[in-house]
Image (cartoon, rainbow over all chains, first blue to last red; front, side, top):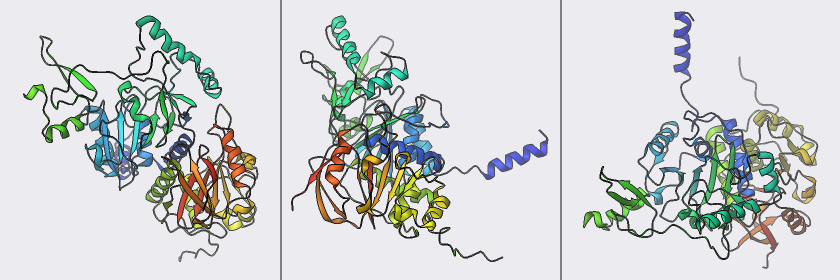
Length: 298
Length: 206
């Protein structure tokens, strides 16, 4: 390429280097918006969509990013969390991406956000009506590790044939004495579709049931969108003699003393000293601000 | 050279700002679909040739494009300006077959075809169903329906003027084939409400 041509390309690139609002072009947004409406109308059903290349790798939340880009508007306030934290790489880069491409307000406070994009946690602070929770989903198909063929799993969903999932949970019991699945714990939505809640800890499953907020799920690489409308029944699969139960922790958060939250284990030094702290940084910070303290501070 | 005035009446009347306009309308529709029975105001000033209402035009401009075959009811199909407006502003192809429509535009709710005539989707792909955009005169008065189902905390009340003929029986049959079935977007002059296929309705009292 000649020097002139290079210069021309560079000038052209600079001239067009203004992205559309929220990065995606309007036709892509329309296609995703139609998939979202179908997802809401058929709760728990995975709607195929023509996932786009995004300026970040698959596995970084391209599905969630495309859903957020298609619903976000100038009046929104966006919060992004990664494993409950507002201050990790994935959360910060996605929050900055939308701050740059939309100019919308961002926040770390769950109560201030109208859209919360999440990777693998549901905030501890109860969600409210009008909020939208957008999940980043790696593998949307709950039956995928039991049946690799898409043609088969699609038929199984069509027939509501979910016996194999109960066999899987039963094998957990036979092997471990209890259901050993701790994350991506399968749920049944409104008595029809078995759905993968994304790799959230099963601790968060009860929060999905009758949730006042709209829950949208985007899987970019697998090209699926699904949804749970507000006030919808979401039941974790279990057995009468082995009822579903969430993780329990034998100590409170070391920083804020909360004993009803999901905790992260943090290694403190080479001697194996460990600390257990809230995975939800916003919840932990606001409790500390309110004067709560854990053993760390006492 | 002076620009030709829009003598035909279909070149103008789209979104003044397609990006923000589409986002605003979509959020209203999304919230209405997520919470059936709630009424979301629509304030976008679109102009469309009669008998297409401006709310209907706003919904079509938000959701329809070259990927979505659109079916028009007799009143709309008889108006060449409507077809030209939709072609120019959305690029959507028209289809004469109700069961091939991604979106069906119905301007006269009393003459709506049976819901069963539209695309219902399949058990494997229930998303391949028609969404019916139905123009109504009012969502504030008229026949009352009590709603229940996903998106509704306890109960919700929807009013329709005018309601399609035999509406409860048709809607009950539509819901009975879940996950297949059509979804309904109700377009009032300044507002929108939705009935996804999951919503159960019965005659409201009073």
